[in-house]
Image (cartoon, rainbow, N blue to C red):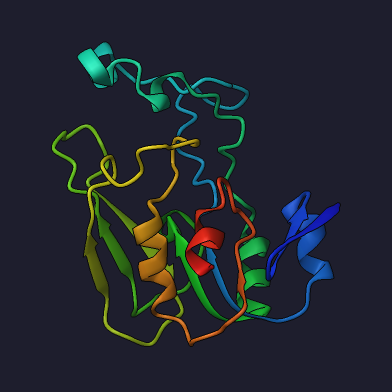
Amino acid sequence: MRVETIGDATLYCGDTLEILPTLGRVGAVVTDPPYGILNLQGEGSTTAVRKSPRQQGSGTLKNRILNVSQVEWDVAPAAEVFDTLRGMSDDQIIWGGNYFPLPPARGILVWDKEQPWPNFSQVELAWTSLNRPAGLLRLNGSRNTPDKVHPTQKPLALMAWCLAFLPEGADVLDPYMGSGTTGVAAV
């Protein structure tokens, strides 16, 4: 494990399952773990493959990042990871929560990606522990992340919206930080 400090943020670089037990209690977990759905060829595949050439798009869509990206990172966390995250934090916002074994929730967050193409996911859901009505944000996913460095990178405005539901000044843990959008939004 490598530890780095950037401003008020501490980055723990290593395996999530090894790092989580070393951390104390945090105010909130806001994260977007791998869902385990990009690997369409089955276990052991390393390249995202669409089911048909039609799903690969044409023109500017043909070479989009999801068609040519490596997906060895797209392995869903084990159920005990979510138990650990829920036990070590007061609040949790977990994108893709509908793919994971989490309890029923009231405060689901919905991101309407305003996708014009029916072969893309139209919305994404975040499971939350928040005792509040469900929330909806309409935010075009492609226009608001122009410098994407990861195929499933969330827009900065989306992550800032999530953080606004948490108590002011809460410590935020993102164990699947990817490109670091949650950290940038927190700053």
